[in-house]
Amino acid sequence: MTPDTTGMTLLVSPARREILETLANLPVVATVHEPHTRGQGLTASELGRRVGLHSTTVRFHVDQLVAAGLLTGHDVRVGVGRPRRHYAVNPGRLAELDRPDTYRVIAELLAQSMADGQASGTPQSVEDAAAQWVEQHASRVVPDGLGLDPAQTPGHFLAKIGALVDVLRSWGYATSIETKDAGQTAEVRLTDCPIWELAKTNPAIGCGIHRGLVRATMTKLGEPEAVIGLTPFVEPGLCIARITTTHPLRTQEDRP
Image 1: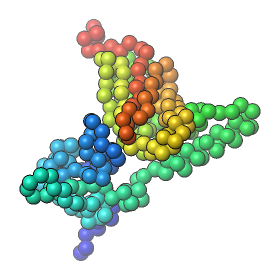
Image 2: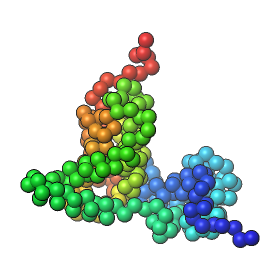
Image 3: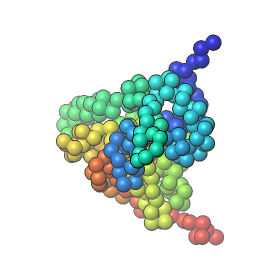
Image 4: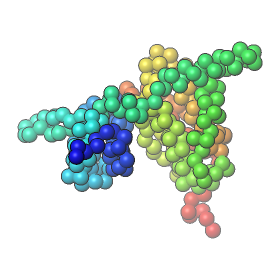
């Protein structure tokens, strides 16, 4: 019997999904914090360290993903010695499975924003348009059990940042998080911006959509007074969003 190696069937496995997501979330352009690019990919050993699997197990999974056309394999020679096998996402197949059509979403929300502005006689900004998208998708934005009261602990605030990251990833961003100031501030590093070309040529629109998306999501998550800062183009392919809660957070040492 010929094994079923269709993409969706293979991705029933959590291990294969994590491998694919790890490779898909590599940046298009190398950064100081992530020297590996999506085009270059990772070796089985490097993948194993990131997903917590032995390299032999990783090879078992990536061989199936390569056979299904979801990954590609290529050899890279570094210095003297045998070339090392790298695995990277197949952009065409990945787009068929999971890539959001972000420009279509933006076109729709801007068209709706213009229509609403004309109807009300009050022009809407791109931040307003992004906020309207969040409102329309509120059921996806707020996870069950998260609670909408302002965060009281660093853990609760980080959970809200995690929900924000889920929204950003649904738009196509690749993200990583770093907490600062005893958990009062979360720094979300954004790479692989799905509207990179738009943001470069028209930052008022591109960055305005991004800022509105972050601000409206945090408001929906019960943090309307959070201070939002966006630093675009920190380096090629990298923007940083900083979200700081204005409520004092109780640490374990503060509890009676």
